[in-house]
Length: 323
Ligand code: ADP
Image (cartoon, rainbow, N blue to C red; front, side, top):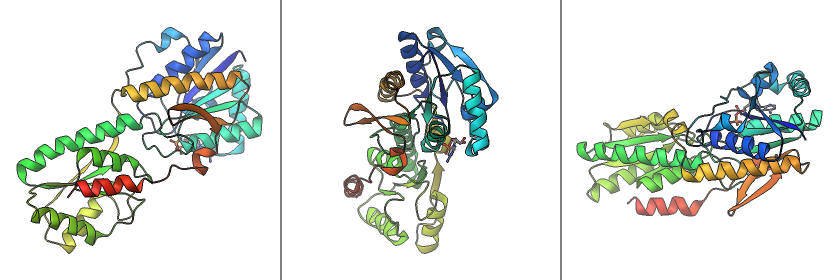
């Protein structure tokens, strides 16, 4: 193996740059050239590929986002699109590929591996922590802390004005980000898709809070909650109760940005070194993960076949402590 490519794909997450840096520096250490592919699979199709030396990745370990940028690429869903990508790999003498992204990006990598025999290794980059085979994804820890700090800030204003806030946290169909940010931020209740939401239960939490002397309260709502988003929940509560004057804050893409935490930088760095090792050892169709502090290699399909299970205990703790 003489030359490999690295790309970031799908939603960006803080720590992707640390991952790119690790792949470039580890590749260089082993005498391999590393090419940066811009804008995910779209850049691979377009041949938007440049050599990345160790100095090209200086000063990026602390930066959020991705210097390679990312994109969603429709043609890659089709066999013909992937054939073009494989041809570009050959034209640029790329012997292997590291894909930093979510499970959608892994589906693409697996297809490239199965249809064209291209050695592909995935690194989990998403703030949602919704990938099986790994306890943590790159970016989750940073996003969790960002969401927690936002809740802290809202608490200040909520307390000053005796207000009830509904705070919407990202995570798609996964409620982990909302649950942990809510627990760490001391929210009164946390609504997540993994647990059925009854509006009457949320009203009971608010009434109990008021009866216990709380003048301000914070309810965290995961964006994918079964009762709807934070606006829908606040509307339903206003319609069915005396809590008519509440505030909604959608944290949105704020959670995607910012300088990565030490945890995410270290995770991305360890995973990048391991991904290059895996390619050198002839592995393909695998993803790098972290399980009980160990960096491991497992099939790409673990990403969607073994989704991390919902921690009921943590939600219980959050609800006990939110009273
Ligand atoms: P993420 O990787 O964050 O889950 P997406 O689901 O948007 O983000 O996937 C990113 C890109 O990966 C898509 O734009 C597409 O190019 C490719 N991709 C996603 N799913 C598939 C699939 N089933 N087959 C082939 N390529 C896919």
